[in-house]
Length: 114
Length: 113
Image 1 (cartoon, rainbow over the protein chains, first blue to last red):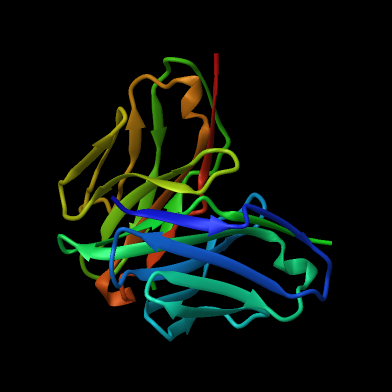
Image 2 (tube, each protein chain N blue to C red):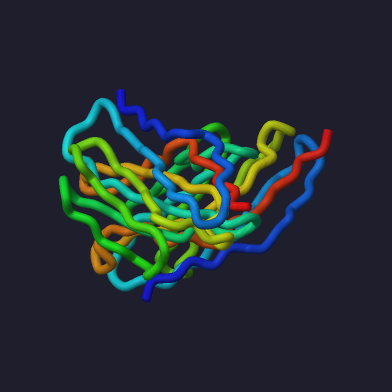
């Protein structure tokens, strides 16, 4: 069966510090991968998605970047965090099985920027 | 573009009550429809899905039917438990949008004993 991991689970960082969040998927090959952000009490915002190694699409211009160095690894980064980067970051994977592209989410990383 | 509208919460119920969360959508073509559930402090879990008109998705006592004529995918459960307290998200994906998910704003449900 497939599993998706995210770490760290919780992170508190000062403004202006760098960021690296990691997401890995097990039990599947060549998945589509996604990064979402969920601000407190709000819905989900798609940040990046990737259909393959080195292929990244950005949905919104911002302070963050993403990379996919391996087939099942997806990294979210920032060089300098802003207060507005605080939120709950969710990674998801999908495969086009049975004609439907269903996304499955990881446990999330809660980021607080102070 | 695609959009999903779901009822705002919070919805507060007593245990064993009937739950309905309304969800309507706007999309080109024939989208797939999903309900996700988020328990406090956790990620989203796929609750159920439907891929074509008149399909009924079901899981853990929850049901939703894909109604193309009313562009709706309402979530129902006949008898809720305290453990059903969570935020519920309706979502769609369409080929026209590259199979990316479009989410509703979420509905918080609180079940009291």
